[in-house]
Amino acid sequence: MTGALFHRRSGDIYDSGDRSQSERAWDDLLDGGRRWRLWSKLGWHDIRKRYRRSVLGPFWLTLSMAVMVASLGLIYGTLFRLDLENYLPFLAIGLATWNFVASFLNEGCTSFIDLEPLIKNVRIPMSLHILRVLWRNLIIYAHNIVIFAVVAVIFGVWPGVTGVLLALAGLGLLLVNAGWIMLLCGMICTRFRDVPPIVASVIQLLFFVTPVMWKPELLGDRRYLMVLNPFYHLIEVIRAPLLGQTPGWENWAVGLLFAAAGWAFTFAVFARFRKRIAYWL
Image 1 (cartoon, rainbow, N blue to C red):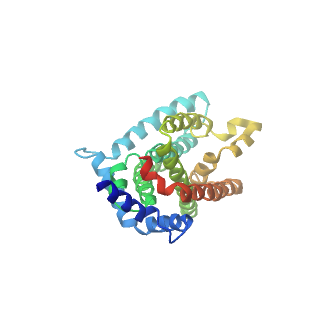
Image 2: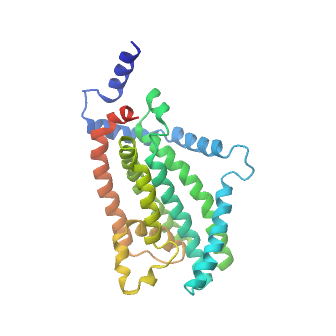
């Protein structure tokens, strides 16, 4: 009887025949966005739970980021003979943003797996779980941005109001891309449990081929290779304005195309396999 009840409940949520799967997938995304109070509180609860009884809380990550920026800044600045006044702000915002990217890529893969009991027992939109993880990582990113703010004050870097607004627009573009990447990775990794370690290895590779610790100018005539790396463009639309520079039109174009193509593909996959996520867990 319990099995029949669970089957009937699952059918009520996922297998209703009154609407197409595309419509139900779209409603899932909209409903998840509307419940911002729920996923924001859940994300904040995750942060408090992770750092319970800790004096500094999430600022432990900020402290480790500060040590990393200082040490890597001195080492790579010396190796590449770079001016620390220009290199340290570049490194600080680059590392903070890359850590945010790496975090939502890694945690996006396990976003459904880690919340298996909740998904199987509570009727809430699947997209809400993605927003919860994304919000949690955005809070940590906000803590790490403090390092850039301190470095910017020390070296007199002032992006101005226009720069801050452009950086916020760039962050919005990054979040739009993060949404579909996490949703797609979450579905794939729920079905194929060997994928998360593969993604972790790819992230390590991307870190070295993305200009985070090194500047694109070092590529010389081969700088065009950066066009093939979408994460470079997504980082640059945030980093450049905060450093008092203007991102190139190609950075925005690649980021927007990446978002449009990614969401189109992910929505098709989500509409097709959304109802199977609970059964894969």
